[in-house]
Image (cartoon, rainbow, N blue to C red; front, side, top):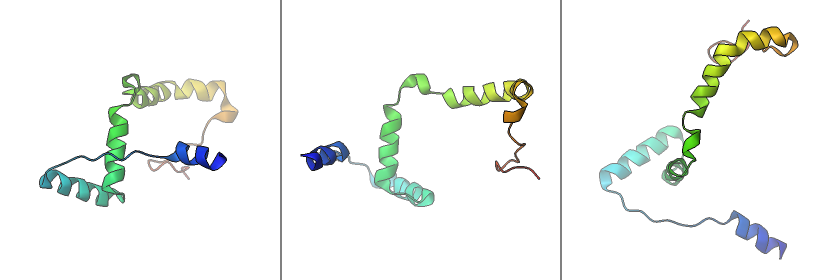
Length: 93
């Protein structure tokens, strides 16, 4: 019984789509460039297509908020202020 529940929970559905040769070539090249598969690339695109539209731009809004308020946060909570980071996200020397 438990095996059946775990199996059903992890199941995925297969979807078949038809694309022309040019699009397939572009998908294959993109997938290879990202080190993934065409299936994974299309799955990610499908997930993006059904994402809640209220989330669009949320990351940019958050980054802007942090940038605008970082000094105030650092002043209010000096013990929690992060070390300054270089452009690659590493602690600056």
